[in-house]
Length: 107
Image 1 (cartoon, rainbow, N blue to C red):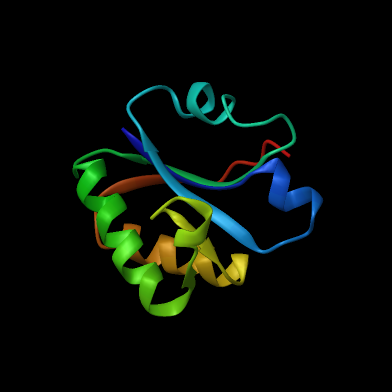
Image 2: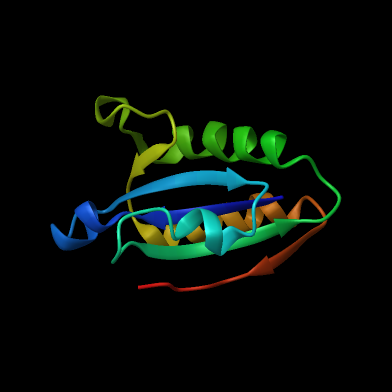
């Protein structure tokens, strides 16, 4: 089980700071490769001892405090804000759990 932070091609091409939080039980690249070609995987973390659904919910709850939730885009997992801060917040949240943090870029 893994959680990840990705910017889809649509927002990358328009240079909008909009990112999606996700989780998967598949190999993470299998899941993220299903996004549009040109999407940018910012961070992926394999959850070793924690429930990835719970971690994803914690990340969403914490992100809601610091970043703009973009429900208007049809998702409760899409946020607008500074990617560096998002990455740091996500890493800090994941640091509270026993996870294997592996930054990757598919851009």
